[in-house]
Length: 279
View 1 (cartoon, rainbow, N blue to C red):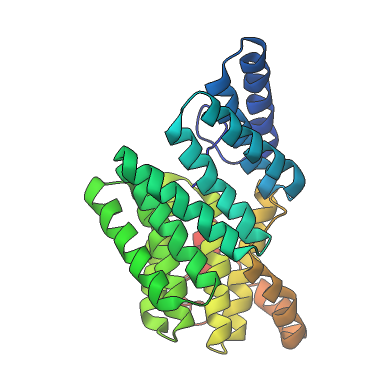
View 2: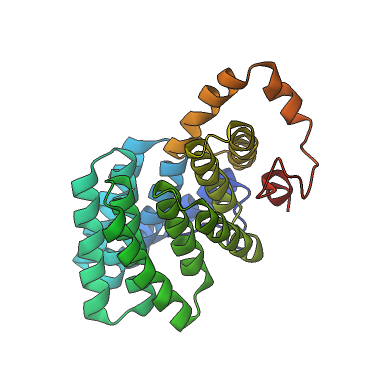
């Protein structure tokens, strides 16, 4: 659900990504290209969000929406509002996040943009998870997944299966959750989205905590942390807050578990998070 900044689609260097967007933005401003300026500001907003620069992200999003509206670029308005809803979710402004996501869904539906509709349905579903409305979350996520598979957009499938896994885990349906987490992380590996690998590992770790499987949870959360650190991401999912709690509970055992970094197929790590992390 992000606009990636490098021309080669490489997510491994956020500093380089930012440099490219800033250079492109400067050119757009100098040449009076409002549509492109709006797109570049939206891209910089996403980069700022994942670097924890929330005020900068909000300013970039606001200006991106304004610029897209000024030239009647409704698709740009919809995508930017959809991404803005992610910032609002970070800020725990649930109602506002839902309003932005639903507004983007309405615009995409009006435009007949199937990929946008799928993404917006998935985002609405994720927001419902955060609000504890699991039944509504599953309905929207299932609709988004169905459309994603119909139009063949793997990235949308990746987001939807992660959301459905989270909702299944929250409902205590761990076997179903694990299968969905596996599917989501496999898609992420296939399309090269390393950040999403980290997200799935974090969400899986939280699901393991709900099951009382603290050792497995620690391995998954620690693996997620290494992914985020390698990408320079400081704004991490709330589930990562469980890492220190689990580490404290495990005591010296946590250090012993770290030695399992290269393990595969272990009963201790049913999802094999560390092996998946290194793919």
